[in-house]
Image (cartoon, rainbow, N blue to C red; front, side, top):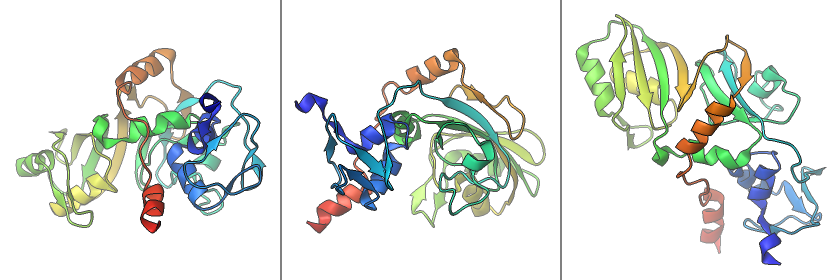
Length: 255
């Protein structure tokens, strides 16, 4: 009987409603019910249970997952909360199925971001410990020195976050432009790194995520090819895809 049970956050992600991380937030906020009862974090769903989010029934998945590569324009916010942010990525794309972005790209930045309705794959891609590469082209406000390149590549302490950036690959393109390949996803990482060295980012574009390259016009999207998805799946095959959410740990601490 236990073999037929599925953790609630996994159920929501496999149904294509949201990522496991977002599911944990919804559960912790009391917005999810099982048979009209608000469950505890970690509750499992049995066959025949009725799962709802904000009163909407979430059924088991019957269709193939969607994987999109989107060239995000400046000004679009990577959020699924369409009630709060009018310039959100979901309304902008207006895809006929419910999808959500894998990770974020700052509002003033542009370039490649992946979207899917496969919540189970999201955490595998996002985990910084998995060392998945993301490549950016950055333009700054003054001439780039060799010292700047070496400092950026060697790691910088970001005081606001209390963390050092990992060593990374940085190459100068021209007087004001460089490329940087990160395996880390700290908040506003590149902008904070540049600010530490007294440079200001003028433009920031993400051009690659792992094996997926930016090759569509600004504001457009395309589906991943079978070859791209196969390679991506191989790259993340050894990645952890689950983690104990902070909300769950917080609940433990309250007991």
